[in-house]
Image 1 (spheres, rainbow, N blue to C red):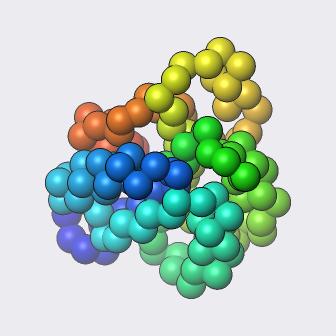
Image 2 (cartoon, helix red, strand yellow):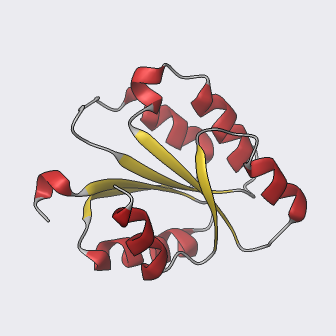
Length: 133
């Protein structure tokens, strides 16, 4: 896989340890062009809004559901309000360490959320996601 075929990754989680683990798993796949981590959903949405658009790049976002101040669903609601020229460059995967039926059902209400994943993110998760791109 050449650098141009690699994907960008954004990890949004209020736990520095969970960000570290996810970064390490993604990096070990050898499929990442870049990896950025954010400890708050607000800083992640600000990055998405201001990031340069490159039509040949796609970014996978792993966003934790349970975060203080702005949770994962708040992030997705703000993301979905952005122009299509921005949102079409991203695929969102919600992650959580707890399996809450309410959260699982709610994930289906957002077209930008591709799938729910259990924490921690694994190399198998990454391999499955990459095979879809």
